[in-house]
Length: 509
Image (tube, rainbow, N blue to C red; front, top):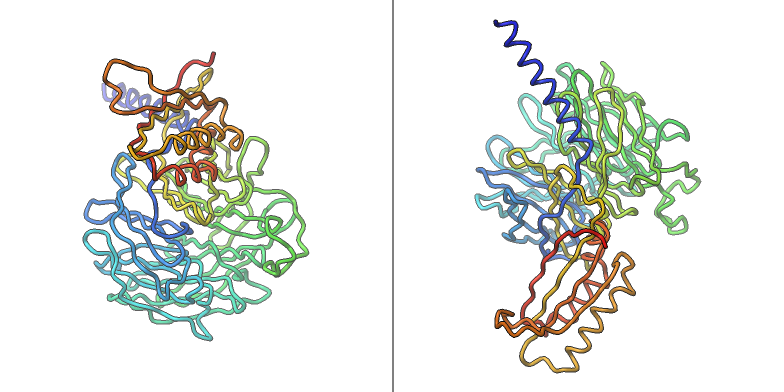
């Protein structure tokens, strides 16, 4: 009898694993909300849970915006906070708990400083520490931060993109102040010139830190000791066959079973102007775009393992952020944010360390570092923003099983009520501008419009209705965040009394 019960339980578990695998292959992103930010752009995003409430921090030029995030993916603005000297942009933000106190650490890129904020009970911030750059700390043009927890203390590792690059370690005091421990100046051996990504693995009781070098086109591993000091373990440079590290950018990692992996993306130098002087080593060879996977050996060293190369079915050009959406023993789901493809690509890493693409969403805006995964209950979300000046939006997505849209089109209906003092000429101009969107946004399949002719008395004062047709999810996102659409909203906003928007999917005629 016990044998039968065990066999049944094993069968149910096996079937559930098959179901999960099938679902993971068909995941998709669905936008849940978007809100305006107070700054010009969103360069970085992080999140944190405090007392059961979920908070999102959006860092831009000169300030940090704070929002709450609920179980439906709805963002609610809480506060905004000015950065030191109103500089920035805020880069490499990381929130963590240090000996019972919650802090947000911010790399103030052009303020040449690390700012420590205490996270208050309502999620808002209070600056408690300001650590300025010195000749030995490599905080100039600070970009990336990584908290490393050891047995008796926690440390903040800092990397930047500067004329005097390197890697630095600071001990985090209970009050948020930072005490310098060690700095390692960049040289021809290690890859710390432009550390835009870092990740930490614990392996056999030892702690290892992995960095990407944007300017020197490679990745490095470091052993971190209990006192916060560190030493270089190994270094891997770009080549033209089994790795793609020119402009090494995002770095993350995951443990699957007994295997530990580091995943590295890149924004290839070909996407920058050679003549600008920004790229220190302009004699590069473009050999495509790909995500590189490294396996960690028993000594904590990086070993090239596999790649996922970009093709016509993926969106991997200009990778700027890779987030772990979810992970279990046999696979992990990752999200890759791209600046040049203006998309979020979902990919799967199996236990053998092989990547395979799932689905992507064309967001309609470029992502430059501002992408963060966050879990609420059993639901996985992604929060995204854009470095694009004037975009001024923060967007939430839910990662869910893909909905079958085959043979369907999307109708986007916008009903408008104009203010009583709006002139006929203003209304006519607004209508023309709306209809002209089809000429500026090719993803719009069709636009039709009309003036309300209902005599039922239930129109609620709405007078004009516009119906826009999209062929897929991507087209709607591109339209929503397109410069032409944003300009239209800003232009006609002053004469709009109210708006009612509804979308629905219907069978394609």
